[in-house]
Length: 254
Ligand SMILES: [Zn+2]
Image (cartoon, rainbow, N blue to C red; front, side, top):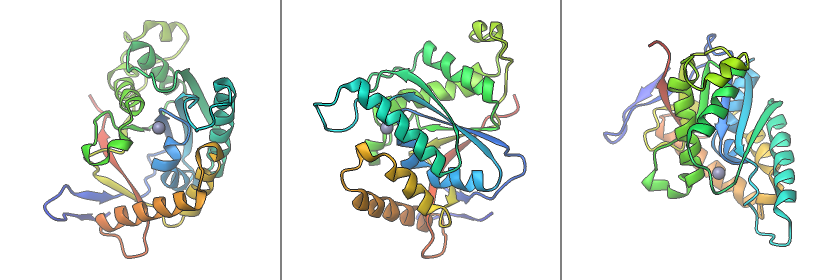
């Protein structure tokens, strides 16, 4: 595992496979968020035997530009696209929470619903959108992302581990669970990079499953490749490498 300090900026550590990572849960606001932010990493994980599940807060029914399509049809289409994209990177468990796209609020109901998924799947790691706005990349900080990220963070600590949080979950037979690590997508304070050179084609295959959101698939692939090259360079990887980056927060222990 290497680390590098560039231009006085934060250290970005290179992630290496670990035996104590068996299950990872990705929480995101919309269908396609995980594929833009983390599908290469998900493919690395599933390729090394990690079981990965997705929890998508909305159905993404406010997406696309076709005003003639009923929004309920768009929701069904986007759920199907997300399931197909998940399959491209080895993920078969996808839970949709059905919150309204564009109006997500990180309140107690969402915390409870994410906590329910955490206590059911019992992941070692939760990957979620950053609840912190990134002023250098404002489009990554959609309000739904910030709200989903805040609720997921609260679900990891303290809700999932506290038996007295959302007591109705105990009534459902869901015992407390402590998640060891929280990873945040699109974080202004990224500190870990995952090399995805070997899984990049699968990330693009997953992204291309979101046909309703992809007017120019080749342009999207080129843009995503350029970003992945930049991340790899900032993490000190050799030229030609591709990477995704995250903020890693230890959440085990206390
Ligand atoms: Zn989104």
